[in-house]
Length: 242
Image 1: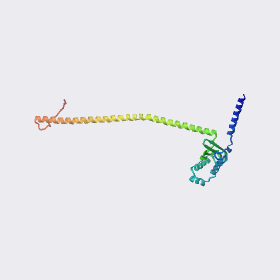
Image 2 (image 1 turned 30 degrees about the vertical axis):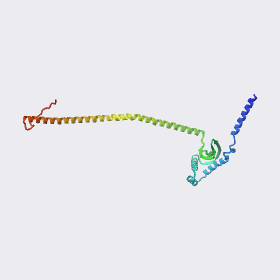
Image 3 (image 1 turned 45 degrees about the horizontal axis):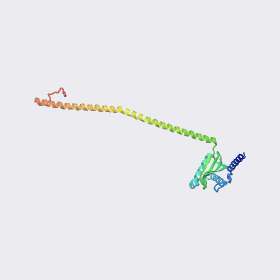
């Protein structure tokens, strides 16, 4: 019984110890040589600089600044246009996850809160990216997710309808070809009949020419046997071929 009590007490101490460790004050942690106040000052200084930039300054940085600076100015202008003018600072939070450290400063804007986030590579504390995102409620996030889902399903159905139409068109093409071939067949038959008729007429004309020559030869032979000077007096009534 005593052993069980000691074991339970040890487990409780371990749990309380872990809870105490998890509640470490972030303001006292060393972030690879940087303090909580330094990271916060960096974020707030960036916001103040962006909020008070003149158009002349923006033009200069857009022309001569680094890519990170240009992207940051563009994102700030988009945030001000969408969320309204900057009013004051809100909560600040530092989070370490693996090889990445993020410093997030909440900004109270005129129309909606936003979060400016510095993303660092922890081992070198080099800035990977700086983002400015709006703060949305759970309902707004669910509504956006629902709209995205509906749009995705709609796009899928549209693609399926297009595929069905294409398949239907592939079935129509052979039918159209058969119909076209059926229209061509009577025309070819007519052409064949005309050609056959012309050949028959040509054969009859040739046969008539042959009969005329045969009549002339027979008449000449008869005239020669009768001793007549010409064949004018001879008339051939008919010719029978054997």
